[in-house]
Amino acid sequence: MDIEIKKSKNPVKYEDAIKLMEMRLSNINSNNSNNLIWILQHSDIYTAGTSFKESEIIDKSINLHKTNRGGKITYHGPGQLICYFVIDLKKRNKDIRKFISLIEKTIIDTLKFYKIETFADKKNIGIWYKDKMEIKKVAAIGIKVSKWIAYHGFSINIDNNLKKYNAIIPCGIKDKGITTLKKIKNQDYKDLDNRLIKNFISNLQNQVF
Image (tube, rainbow, N blue to C red; front, side, top):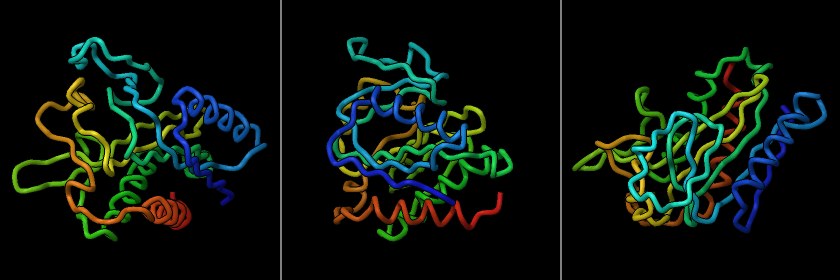
């Protein structure tokens, strides 16, 4: 499978990222481009998916960017790893649910290397960690499918500012918290992106759709 790996060292503007993914989607649909996995960071931004509600905005003064991905409101910012992708599902039996399971497995497998046990939840999409007190989200997933090509992606909280989530009800979930990898286990995560890419590609190649 032909996949281009792209890594951006400097923060990427959200609007620019969406434009690039939509252009790639169009090119893949015309058989003019490879699939894409893109690792990056955003500067502070709140984004709202197609199922968000106005009542989930606690601080009405925030600048909210409405987007066409699935899901509700989330926050992106420094210290958070974002993995965007543009992956053709036409060659994968057009199975969206299986593709989401593949993403969940990719994140869970990657965090296992760092001795962090996480899990997926069918009712609340994302990747979760259970500490002694409560269940907390450590990775968010938001996907859009157009012409049977999946794009947007997921984010993993490494060491971002959790206070930023106080302005919203993250992903519309009130009874669970948010955490970061550094809070779970204070260790070096500098190779996380490479391990994530390796697992993602391996799962794409090995999983039969």
